[in-house]
Length: 126
Image (cartoon, rainbow, N blue to C red; front, side):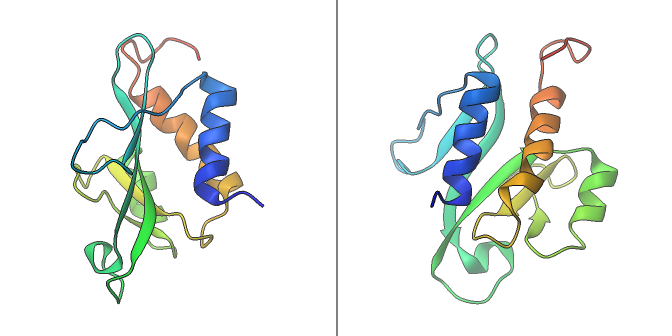
């Protein structure tokens, strides 16, 4: 069975033809999803110590940063598995825990939103 991270990567490839890249030589496991035309990020996968996102423990967990409507992000952060954007603008970015707390099917629409919010021309269709 695929991990939540693998499911999201497969969805991005299938939906947006996006192949992730690893732009950080010091963090080769960090993956970025970008728009093909502008190279602008719409998602960032990281593995960080649990304590960095406010959880107990130091073991690493996979997380996903996505751009999100601030009102929706505020509502989502009241649920398990959602956090203020780690290492990003906390108002406009949302961090999602990828340990199975949030199912991939519930993340796909958020990835779509992030893709749309980061378009060069926001009115342009997918």
